[in-house]
Figure 1 (spheres, one colour):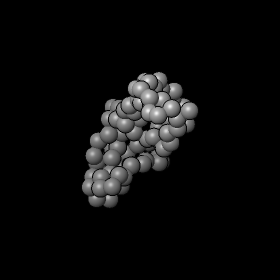
Figure 2 (figure 1 turned 45 degrees about the vertical axis):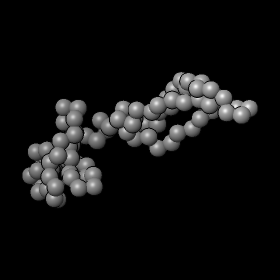
Figure 3 (figure 1 turned 120 degrees about the vertical axis):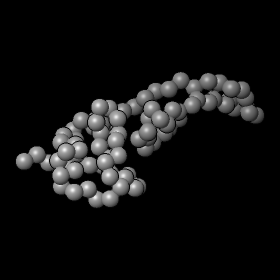
Figure 4 (figure 1 turned 180 degrees about the vertical axis):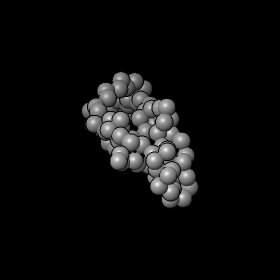
Length: 86
């Protein structure tokens, strides 16, 4: 028998189907729901670390230093765990 999984956020149980999250239940689902709507293979979620280099814009000077800025799209990179500026 396959192992089925659902993901729980703060209030909902969700499944990932057709490249989108769908809400399956707001309470602990029954076994039949896990089998019909669960995720069989969690390896479809690529959880490897990725380094993304983003260009920053020089926006002027402050005293003897310079100010740079850039915008991070949190909808595109929703699992950001670390930001650093070099």
